[in-house]
Length: 488
Image 1 (spheres, rainbow, N blue to C red):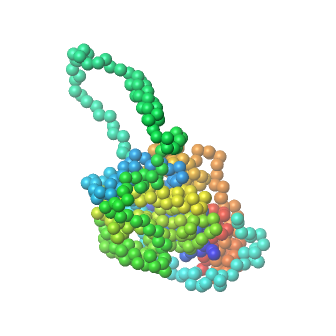
Image 2: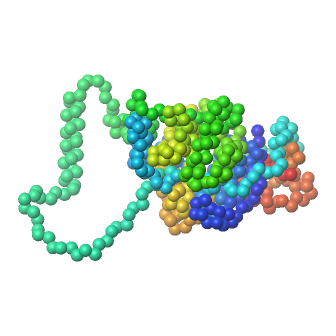
Image 3: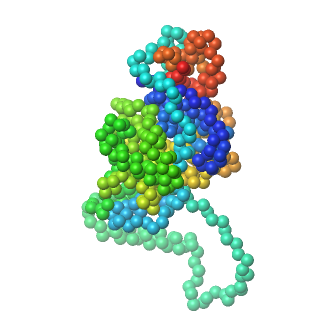
């Protein structure tokens, strides 16, 4: 199976969904007729991202709001205090029906749809997939002997400035002799520690002979999975069920819930993001959240559910209240979009779903060891509303020049100075998969697969060399030798 793409080229000077700049956004895009999960994994590890079947890469040093690919180390993730509060809030609602009055993640409604998809992009008029893959002839070796196949949501509250006061300080009356003398904090801590140790010893002596957890296990922090189910009784007031359905109109579960999903999406877009009904109809829903170039695949060492595009549905008492759109890839679970019922916004479902998706990634990793990361899309430091993604730690940002992963803690100081940064501190490092031989890039021409060198000879001096070279440099040498670039 091949990945087949068609160039759309550079798109500059259009509205940014993050800062509302009417002409500041810049990206490079291509239409993907079909794509293997490994090719998409390799592309997102070079800063690409899909919206429906359109795959795009921000031009980082030109766009107004540089978008850095961010990934969370799912296995080492520990929820923050804010994350724990969100889980507790949802579980309290499920068990007792108590709905919070106000949202605790105000402003973190997720990415606006016009920042996730590229406006004005339509499918190309000619579809090379109208022919069956079996009809495609591969002449990569017969025409060019030198060509060979080569072996991818909660913000911490900003610290408030110190308050200054112009009030004149009145002289005191001295120490109060009726109160005990002040003690050093160090001495108080020491006394409390001794009291705790004595209490532990007493509990050990009076405990029953039944086996107790070892000291090492008792000192371990609770896992994410434990927090997700904490405080939930066996018979809660509300029932929450999370279902994973493949995005396929041939799947009965997907079909059965399709109309309900469309209605929920429209309600979310109009209420939360202020879209007009014409902007969030069924055609938009299908194009951006159902149409996927990814071919469903299974592998002996892969997860039981396989690879591809999925909707993770949250069913509350028999109705869908939220849907997370996900891609399951060889090394990660990639978050595409989330939409939910606005009536439940006080439950912070954006944060809750991200935590559930991290837990889901950990679950898949037990079946497929290399699937160990949770990709949150793009981190946009220049947009304060999008910094919440950096709170899921440990996490890395992708260097836009070397495509190496850099711990987010090392990136923040650089991004505070400049919205665009190389991120990789090693000045000698380069792109390990940089384009070295354009002639080996594969193209699809007249139902025939051939290296670009053979295609150029066949066309007797093709004039598209600069265009193809730009594409190949952005996808990298390895992908260029696997992906078929459609040439009319």
